[in-house]
Image (cartoon, rainbow, N blue to C red; front, top):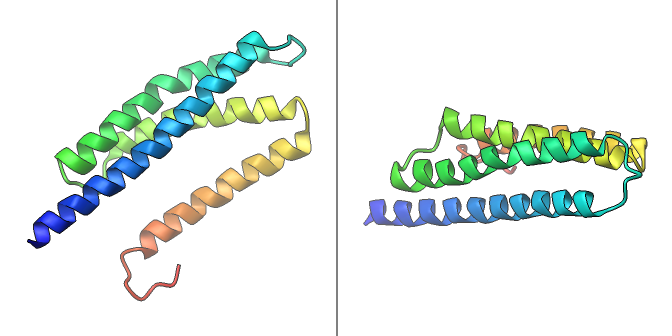
Amino acid sequence: MKNEIDKGMIHEIAFNTNYATVGYITFVLALIFALISGNDNINHKALIVCLLICSLPSLVAYLLINYLVAVEQVRKDSGTRGLAALLGQLPSFIGIFLLIGNYSWIASIIFTLLIVFWGIMYFIVVKRGNDPTSQI
């Protein structure tokens, strides 16, 4: 019985993570279409579009690997999943940083600092999540 509950919980977590990833992929695609169809007054437009497009295969790979590792193999950790997430998110974050930088360098720096901050916080929460007495 306990094993069934754990499997159900793993399915739910994997699906919620995949929904977030699909939302991010949709956001990246919307940015690509907006940049391609929008005005040409954006600096480094070709580089931004290139970075966003290059991130898509890794984001889709992350989506598929996350399901495979979490649900099919019932494992928590996977280096391949982490690599796919890194190769998918890093170029897209750089592209978004450059796009925001066309309008406000202060906003692009704050955007980058917040990504770093919440990335660190994510790993702290994951690490402390195994401790039942943690308040984080």
